[in-house]
Image (cartoon, rainbow over all chains, first blue to last red; front, side):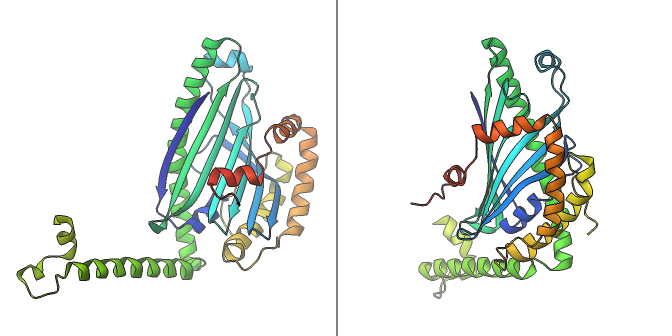
Length: 225
Length: 89
C-alpha cells in the first residue's frame, strides 16, 4: 500500500468552497470527468449535516502495460460519500473506485475546513491510500508507483481546476450578493481581531511613549525585538 | 441559471438532473449554508431524477459494483467524523 498526501489553501471562505464543490464539474481542466450523479442525499437535522452519495464517471487514459490486465476498459466509476457539517464547519469527502478495484483500489479522503488563522480562506487536505492486488508483486509495485505518480499529477490539475471554478462562481455570487453579507461580516471580524491584536502588541511595547522610535512602524519594532 | 452543469451517466436522466441540481444549488447557498433550512426543498425534482437514475442503474453493469462497494466500505458518518477529528465523545 502506498500513501499520498497533500494540502493546499484556497483563498475563498469555506461556505463558498463547499457550494462550489457541487458545481465543480464540468470544468476545462478536468476533462476526464464525464458524468456526475447524486445517488442519495439526506439531512441529519440534529447534527446539521448534509450527507450525499455520488457516482462519478471518468474516462482515464491508462498506460499500455496496464491495459492487458484491465482489458482496455475506457470508462470507470467512482463512488463518493460526503458530509457537510455546519456545526464543525467541515466538508469531508471519501471516495473509492468501483471499476477495476480487484486490481487497484484507491481510497481518497478530502477535508475542507476554514483556516483557523484566517477565516476568509479554506484549508484543503487530501490523502489517498493506493493498494494494488495483482498477484505478481513486481507488477504490484510498478502499479502502485504509477498510481501514486498519476494521483499526484491529477491532484495538481484538480486544485487548479477548482480554483478556476471558484473564481467564476465567486464573481457570480458577488453579482447576486448571495454571500456578501456573511463574507463582509467575516472580514470585519477578521480585521477587528487583527487590529485588536496589533493594538495590544503596540501598547505592550509602549512605543507610543515619547521617544525617537515613534516614526518606526510597530510591525518592524516587533520583528526587531 | 446559465451555469454549465455535469451530465448524468444515463443521458435520459440529464434533463431531470439539471433541474434538480439547479434547485439544490439555490437551496444550498441561500438557505442551508445560512442555517435557514434543514429540510430538503427540492423533493419534486429529486423524485423524478432519482427514479430515472435507479431504473438506469438497474440496467447497467455498475450496479453490482456499487452494491459491493457500499457493503465493503459504507463510509459511515462515524468514519467521516473520525477522519475530520470531529467525532463525538
